[in-house]
Image (cartoon, rainbow, N blue to C red; front, side):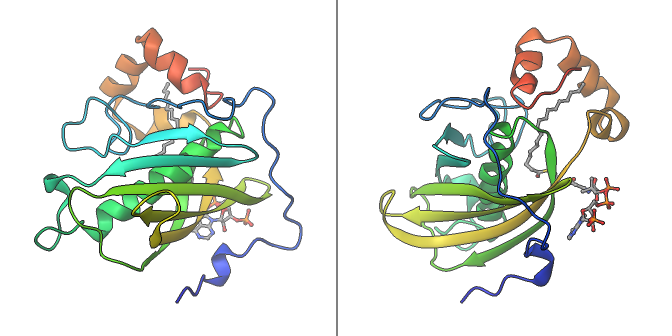
Length: 194
Ligand SMILES: CCCCCCCC/C=C\CCCCCCCC(=O)SCCNC(=O)CCNC(=O)[C@H](O)C(C)(C)COP(=O)(O)OP(=O)(O)OC[C@H]1O[C@@H](n2cnc3c(N)ncnc32)[C@H](O)[C@@H]1OP(=O)(O)O
């Protein structure tokens, strides 16, 4: 049963999301937004290495294979890892709006256990936008892209400026990011101009 809280219900003045004209084309693989990201970075040995792909409209799909390092109970994925996979997929939606945003709230339903070795097929969609607030939902299925829903989530992302990262992040990492042309290119997918 899902019981989304009122904080995740878009207000009356919310509008439908608009796909940015420069958004990645449908079918395009997004690539990591940051090499060290736990969700999508190739540089994180125990990360999820989640590969997100642009869909049509304001939708993304992603796949993630549960590894032994992701266990909670023996042989089963940890719930926090599954929430991370949902969070990462939902976060990738912001590239379709060409905006940077961080998770303000994430509500997750764990519907079926997800064994190690399973591919989780994720699908996410922006449902509404109200000022800086971006409302979105995601599902994760097992057994195939049209398989059984194992997890689902509703989220609220809040648009932020680059100062959010510069002011709160580790200065050494920020400097390294700004000096890496490849990283700057990735960040531009979110309209970040460091
Ligand atoms: C040169 C360097 C380059 C760097 C480049 C980097 C490229 C990066 C590209 C892409 C990055 C994407 C990364 C994706 C990773 C996956 C996603 C994550 O895991 S993100 C991490 C987890 N999340 C946080 O760490 C947020 C921590 N929270 C905060 O920092 C603040 O609370 C923040 C920014 C979310 C809001 O703070 P406020 O002071 O800016 O704004 P206020 O006024 O509090 O909220 C604005 C509106 O939102 C509502 N709101 C905020 N939080 C809410 C909540 N939890 N529930 C309900 N409503 C909430 C408020 O009620 C307000 O609504 P009303 O405008 O008054 O209607």
